[in-house]
Length: 264
Length: 264
DNA sequence: AGCTAGTGTGTAACATGTTAGATGTTGGAG
DNA sequence: CTCCAACATCTAACATGTTACACACTAGCT
Image 1 (cartoon, protein in one colour):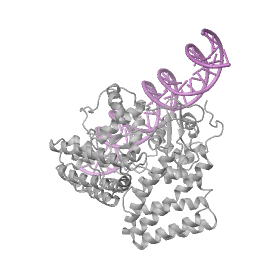
Image 2: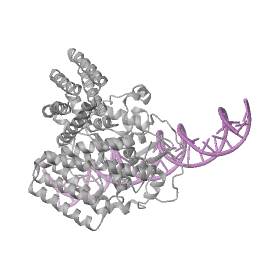
Image 3: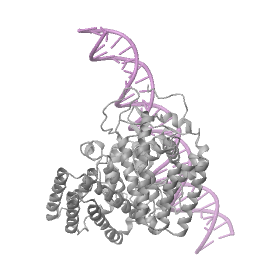
Image 4: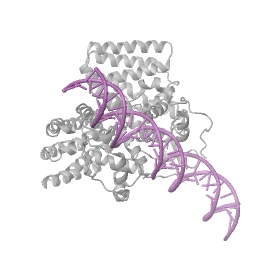
């Protein structure tokens, strides 16, 4: 038997009903239904099939490191805990495997993907490429309304930093990057960026409580927002690149502290 | 019943055995197995589970527009044609839905994703961002060996262009972009770029036979390769951006000629 | 003792039966 | 004639039984 902790029950709730409330806010849906052939349903909003729900729950648990890298995922157990059959769990995991968030060893076991330094470096590269490109467009498109919302976010960050609310600060940080993607004007860019960022997000989440950079981060965010506000694409891209690149050092710190989370 | 052609059988082969030969070359595998806990299998190379095979077959069929945008995919029919049960087909389609290549209407039907202008524009933006970033690194890293392989590819392109072999030219074009991603030195970047490019690839494949730009494309590729060879990152990025941006016009041409392939 | 073959166990993979929901159709009421 | 409701039909979604495989362990051979 694989010696990954057997007894501890996975920390997400016991049946799908528990999730219906939080569900609507979380899912990343790619399906913008409507089919033209005859009279297909005009406005389908959210599918909420069981497999989609399971997908969302597992994905969230992985990204947030509630399920740690390397941890076993036993399909049957998950199915029982969520009160569904094995089928929707399998389909959800299939999708997660496609995104590189789980590793499947056929006929043997399924595990939360471990962290691989070279994959994370590539993800970092992709992130810089996407977000500097996005912020250039954001700087060009920037309106007073957008600038105001960015400043609001920054104010909230200051408050969170003052009371050392790491979780809140983290969420505001993510929201800021999302807003910049949205401000680029490209539909769906935020979702793509978020997906490519998922490996990095796992690292950041694990680092959250070692994090002592809040005040520096705040300064970097100020620079970013200021560059957007003054509609200076080159400066904006530069500040963003500097900001994102700070991750690298923290990554190596994490590998020293928690080597078991890493692969190879 | 949905009035999408019933009788015409899907143009891919009838059972998995037919594919085993071509299979090994095509699949994009994210699983780089090995688990450390006890003595997990050291060197697993390719899983070749049925669902992975089905995934690869369907994906290829969609990307290559063998299955046209908007076309119905009937799970049971696919299962029969491939000689497998419905389960692996479902799991494969689940994954394809996650990548935005199919649209699922729960309890109603599954369709090859139609083309959405705004999604394609975003994909185009992402492509420019990723590939200009990649080519900068490629230009910096460029060695004589890499340059030689790029020139070989270009020679082959010239030959293909001379005899008007569109398919071959298309494949060499893709290979060139892959080589540039690889030359960036980032592990897995090629796969990420390929995935983000999939919507665009579908368009390009459909445009293949309207394509009259081969000679211009050739000139652009020459410029790109020359910039890499002389290790000029800025110039390389510029030539790449110019090159990729040429897609936009062709896209609008396609929408005029084949509006039924597009959504909304 | 070290190595190999055979056996046991746990897991995912696969097949198939059943249910639910979306759409289309038809018939009857107004 | 129009509208609505009941029903028929089609498909995917879900549940569950079965199979195949990977690994671990053990015993027997060298």
